[in-house]
Image 1: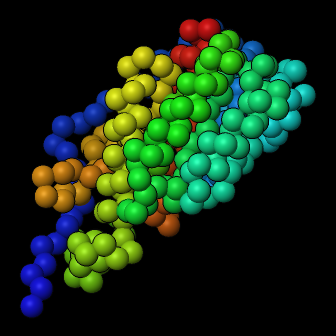
Image 2 (image 1 turned 120 degrees about the vertical axis):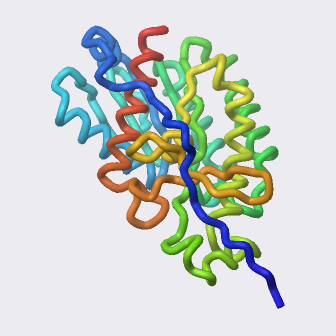
Length: 268
């Protein structure tokens, strides 16, 4: 007979205060509006772009020219250009696609560039070290060849706990034995994110998407526990399907990425 210990999502007791978009100056927004930026992504990236539009609709001081393109000519003007890169479930294809876009002309023109993996790119059977090594090698090479471009590093997003996790016995068993669930997937994502944070968070432009997703609207971090390890989860308030961002989630992420972009623009 199998003995099951239920895995529940929890919140930390310590409240986390994140930087506020209200603290960014008008001068910083004006400087950002003059920059040329490329953002590579897939579906959650479209959520973030929609969130940026939401924020700009509320704040007249943020004026970005947002266009979907990666053609070199689009970077002849200040722009936040974005496009799909690679294929979902194939993180190496996204690294290669981003490099190809830089080498096709964008790398010589942009002030800032970044791309993000999707949560489906790192799953329980992934090798976080292998993916990180491929990413780091590509980025370090790009930094040498395009020394004037600031490359922003982005953690891989998380998934939310399934409905009823910790209350429904079937879901709890799935989490424990590795059948479709999110605990082991988020654990692999967390391992990749730790590698990325250790390498870049203190020295280069860094957007901790996973961290922000894990902090609920009240300011508390959401996680589950497996053994001695705390495993971050996306706060359930930010999603309807467990992975993509809803209106509240996309706005929160957009605000925080705009802060990072403004800070990076000020440092150029």
